Length: 310
Length: 310
Image: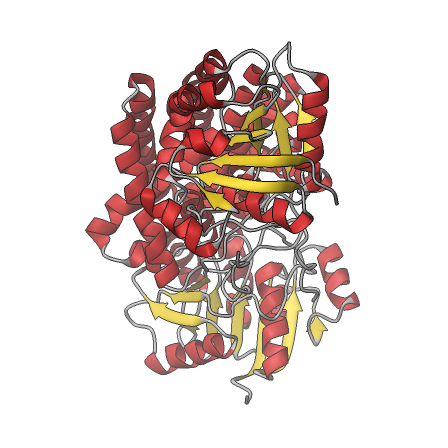
């Protein structure tokens, strides 16, 4: 493939930015990849493993003359980074981000960007429970959605070019309104993560009482919850604080629904439980048909081949 | 390996019994495997695929002269099956079950078994989201726990022999009190399943409003929930009805805890969220160290090799 952006600056060098670096390099999509991370330790690691062509000590230096700037920091840090880099952006450059919340990022970032710079917010629906500069790998985005939430006045050519990059890294793209994105993600990602964190927290309390058995005998349901609940604490703290309304709305619906099922258990209403569980089974079929998961039975991942290495 | 039981009767021919049939056959652990299922369709399928050496039309016929009888039906059906087979059991035979709840099964089954028959309840912590006679495969139990909850007067030699079978199928065994089992499983499996069912139900409601997008953009968290919520509705209805107290206890703790986190989101208390998420990350490490999952990053299972075939 051919170069899509001559110079790409990655601000933040965690799982997503690292995976972008690997994917862009593998497909030859960027002339030069420049990186910056706030933590000196992360910068040092990135230099050691050669994650980027250059790692700079300041965000301002990283974005100098960059054609594409990717903000890949926790959602709560986006505003401060935008304020820092704003004066140093090249006219005509595109700025995107990879945050899991979109409206709050737009509110925080847009005011700091000069006219003539194209801001096109984005969100790759991809990730693992690992984080940091060593966690990335080139195939992370393959066959995953990368949602773009352009602003009403976003430049069509700039959107098209960013879409080309994302698709060249293996992702599928779609565009939607930022507010709608935040509601959909509250249902499909943010509320489930909070619920998983909560359930693992309950188990942790019980473990203190009953010894190690919760871990020892962790069955399928709980094991999946612990994996979700092992995700990066800073990233998720920021997601919840910055998608507060939609998340609280969904959690409210969740609690209502849970109380209905709890009551059915208490009352011994087997028919209600059976009907409910039959309905939820159907939504799973839809996900498999939509190509978002496979039908391969998941019987615990013990003995799987080792993680893909960066 | 050598034959451990001359004749094994499997009552119920779903995922667990089917996997046992495959595993016992592969390792030569049973002289003859006889099966029975209540549904004529299931019996017909089992005969077609040669799941057992013989499939009988009645449970009584299946257990005749069997050295080991495995009750692999939903927890709510155990009592009726025990009543039916009780008079036909061979003196000295061992009866076990594979139900996810143990005290309720003991209460339902034990009264129907004649003196001289050894009842040793069990629970393999293994499964997939698939069910039925075609769902089983020989490696399902490999490296998984198979908990036994013997009664105070259970015969030590009979317990040892059942343990030999289970270990020969690849599982690890441990013994515990039935009540304790039911509490541990309420935390690690039953409550997580109900929560997953609930969250998928909430999404289903929203989908009716917002079209197909919930399915289309299902991200990692939700995708795992839908898999859990695709499990067999009858089995899970019975689990909740028969482990009512422990499940409701855990769900009560869960809701309390969820409200604390919801409040932290509403109040914008980032420190509390961060601290909580950091604690839950540690429990994940414990599970990996206990060998119950791998560190391989899970980035969605699209593109995995196909399911193991029976």
